[in-house]
Image (tube, rainbow over all chains, first blue to last red; front, side):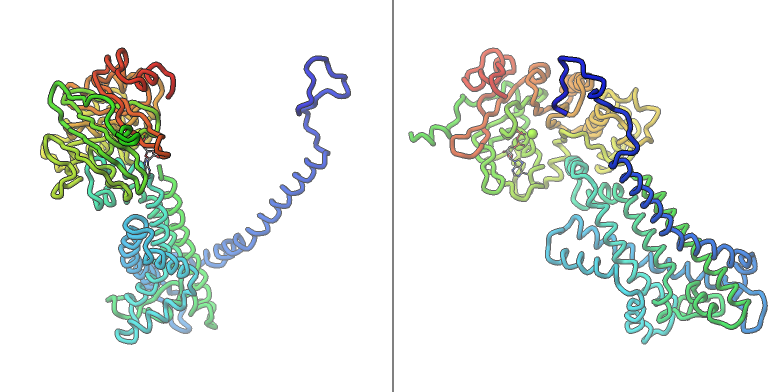
Amino acid sequence: MSDIDLTSRPQESQRLSLERRPFELRALTSGVLTGLTWGIAILGSIPLFSVIIMLVAEGGARLDIEALTALPPAGFEMGGGFANAIIGTLVMVAIATAISVPIGLLAAIYLAILDPHSPLAGTSRFVAKTLTGFPSILAGVFTYAVLVINFGYSAVAGGVALAVLMLPTVVLAAEESMKQVPKKMTDAAYGMGCTRSQVIWKVVLPTGLPGILTGVMLAVAGAAGESAPLLFTALFSNYFMSELMEPTASLSILIYNFSSMPFDNQIELAWAASLVLVLIVLVFNILARLIGQSKV
Amino acid sequence: MSATAEAMAPRAAAFSPIGDAVIDCQLQKVFYGDFLAVRNSHVPIEKGKITGFIGPSGCGKSTVLRSLNRMNDLIPSFRFEGHVKYHGQDVYGKTVDPVVVRRYIGMVFQQPNPFSMSIYDNVAFGLRLNRYKGDVEERVQKALERAALWKEVKDKLNKSGLSLSGGQQQRLCIARAIATEPDVLLMDEPCSALDPIATRQVEQLMLELKERYTVALVTHNMQQATRVADTTAFFGVDISGGGRTGYLVEMGETRQIFQDPQEELTKQYVSGEFS
Ligand SMILES: Nc1ncnc2c1ncn2[C@@H]1O[C@H](COP(=O)(O)OP(=O)(O)O)[C@@H](O)[C@H]1O
Ligand SMILES: [Mg+2]
């Protein structure tokens, strides 16, 4: 307000007021919009919470020691569990991580540091971004054509299919967090007499590590829940795995198989397995958050 | 002589140090791409002394300093004519490894830039890089003591270097730079991000450092130059050719530069007529 006159005292009626006026149009609009946002946020979280509540209600009852340690039941059998599927999922996710993290890191180093502006880097970046939205079943078909046709269904093939899905996420997250490392820090490293590879391994990677790990954890969480690519690659097995080159059970395929069976026992187990799968994904997501927060 | 040739000629008599010059830096022309950033500057760095670089911003102080340890190699458009000799060896010689040069000629930057690791690891970084065989712990403590930081951090050596205050971070960077006992220390406006108290601490530190090292110090602050520099090089900007090219106007003993400048430009600058 430029027309405040400080030379003479204002009349009571024209005195500048700093009081809150709740019924002014501006305040009313603000109130309505705030309320609306709240409403929509609650609406949006209803499906999310219903799924979790349903999983806990339906799956929680059967989630006991037997479910976690026994093999899947056949036909009319009672009891049983899905221990082999838990192991299979963890093993295949581990294989996928072991493949995608080293390759993804090296690719990210190339993209972020070695040659960020080259045509190859631009193309790779574009492909990686496209692949993050890739239908996951195609990763399965791809691995089927490349591996399964020659070597049969196996945990390794399942791991490779999941690795194909994880790779773009790992590359893009790692590139992003390496780019976040301030230039003054790499300058300091060069100033100390580091070679370029020493700058990368001793300064850029450790500094970007929290962000890289966050990306890896999110990719792992995504891969653990995938079923389509495993259908073509790992298939399923009713027994504990004895080697990596045989058909292997996974939680997601078990859920898929059991939920369509006409037996109550299997359907209950599918619910319990779903709950376990969600818990596994949740653990990796929480880890990703914790690691992300430890960023300095 | 044509007007331009006259402008290009060195104006002051070349400064020759009384003692040994550790670095003999003769920059005829320094370019960033097509831009001539610095010309005609002969800046010898004398052993065991603090050589201060002063001048208005953009006159090429950092450019000259960074050419001494080949930090400018990191800028793709950089090229220069002239030579930089370190103990008689050509720093830009074909067989010279810039990484090795930087291990002898250390650097402290304008912005404090500790690594995102513990205080201890920051100081031990260069020792590990050089595969130091002796007692790393002892060297770390000594470097922190010399950087006047030991008392403040001795109980939290495992805390991140980034958790320190700005002044402490800068002293940590100094400790990191001196832990490997480099021969020469280049400091590019090391106090510009610091408050007055931290500035005095770092200045005190520089005076102690010159007992063991040779220091080249860029500063925007003339009082700082008078307080710590033994020799001062004053750079100016030449805008006659349409560009902004920095050059060495005058170099001499600090007292002479400030009390008895030989060049009109120096006189104007040290009396605060422009900055
Ligand atoms: N990386 C660079 N690329 C292009 N020009 C640069 C670069 N660094 C500095 N310059 C230019 O060189 C001149 C000298 O810069 P600098 O050495 O930083 O001056 P000072 O440190 O004295 O302020 C300035 O005109 C600046 O714009
Ligand atoms: Mg500068």
